[in-house]
Image (tube, rainbow, N blue to C red; front, side, top):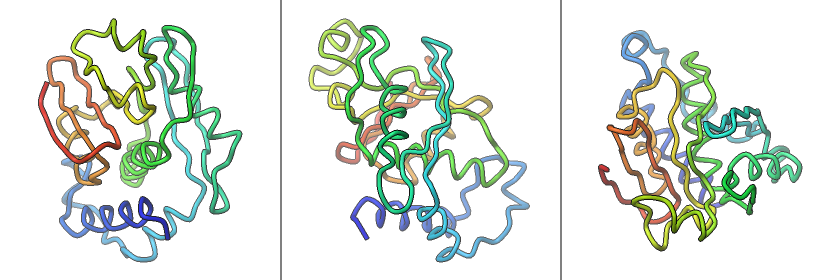
Length: 192
């Protein structure tokens, strides 16, 4: 079992064990989860994410992993959806980042909250990054390792806490702009 997969399995088990639930109304009535089998089945199943781009209005469900390996066609679609829309350029996105998005969305879907992940920004070329207000010079966006997201109906503070429970890397909470930054760099947290 690879390190990223094991990390997400343990993080998902920790979420279940601590009773974190995505909606207050569902928290009290959440069913008991059989941690080893259900989480194992989750990561063994094809990994699909539903992405939407705020800049272009595009939406697509992509399956980037199946049968224990990357699905090249689906992975390419995911990379395209996470492209720099300013110059229409895509790169190979970090699989750990896709797994983090899958974990977040899978957790919500388990509780019947089925909405696309709205991507405000993902990969950025150096040119785009240099023009982006407040962007770090050595941003993980430039490396294909970061996204700025929101999910309809999910408060950004909750989305931040859910992503933090999976310990996928760096997380920034931007309440005034209503989005969460997630990357697969070292684990760190900030408020923007």
